[in-house]
Image 1: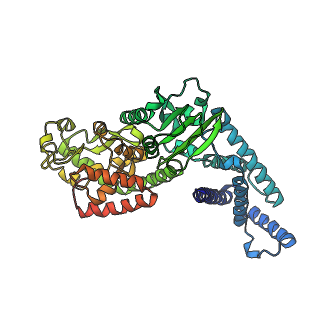
Image 2: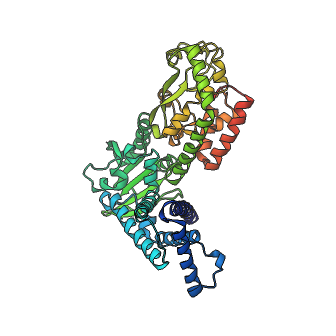
Image 3: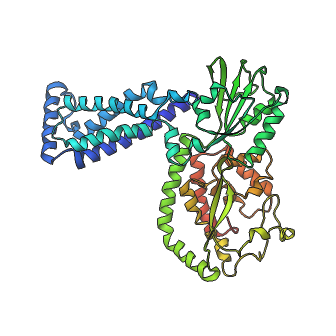
Length: 478
């Protein structure tokens, strides 16, 4: 756990150092130094100071760009040594944290350091207007990358759009002012006997997750000192945020990572097994955005050609929107090129006797719903390409379990509901292994395997293999 925490802070530190250093060197060269002459005069002053105070440093190391990098690195080391910057507690009360206050503090800390350093190093000949702008931008960068919550907001995962349900928590409880609770929307509060807690929690969470976007589970305990093993395992494997508020010191049967704090004479147990949350979500979304933009640029001629082909053989609408279920049960419209006749999804029931797939899957040979001459789009999964726009919007990822219809989700058991705890994708483990399987258990196997082994490396590996699977046309249709 400690190693993971150190690695996370090191990666964030390195990213910030590279980002701010690169921006600073470019910005100073482009805007801050008024002329090359003033920059050279500043260099001569630094060389003079080197000869007087630190002549052990080789002369060829004395460069303005290198000095700027060292100044930024030293500042970040000092900043990261403070708890103020590195630690943001979701279990704080809402009024204990204010974004404006945080930015103002960062602004004064940075500018005190910056202008002191410029004065001591005798760096002059700078544009005051551009320097003022720089003094505002760097604290803004530091603020944005202070914690994953802010970046997640910008990338589409907003706490204000997330929901929670609570069990036995009073509506008048002061604990509802905790950041983790107050920024999210309450779906409902369930009252039940503690003796029936296990059954009620599992049933309510399972049923709620099938119709709502559910992200946080809150349980208030009075007399219980130990959860039932079924409930404990269920909550751990749920891949969501779980908050247990207890009057007693709890004991767990399973070894897992959690936090415990005491607030208002209550013990707050918190664990977050959401596999795509925080820094992990940010990295995945950043890769999705970058790769999707590249794909759109590269595939633009192909997309335009497919648009004209569909328009010719099927007329409008060329693009269709289908209701699908995404991350944590969030509903969204998935885009596809139209390859079927109108109301094709409603024809599933009448064609169900010809369906060879199991569970909620539906696929038949010589499907009468497919428009003539457009079958090749499905064969090579070209009809799925508009989902790149779903990826850009944050509703889907390039890699993940395929999003299914809402009525399909209603058939999931409590174990398979875990597939909703990752972003749905355009491709996944199933598509590179057994794309055309008729067995729903195979879908289940690969989806759970992906969730339990998810990593950025796995996503990149699947993307690489998908290209060759489609080109080789092992099977039909993603």
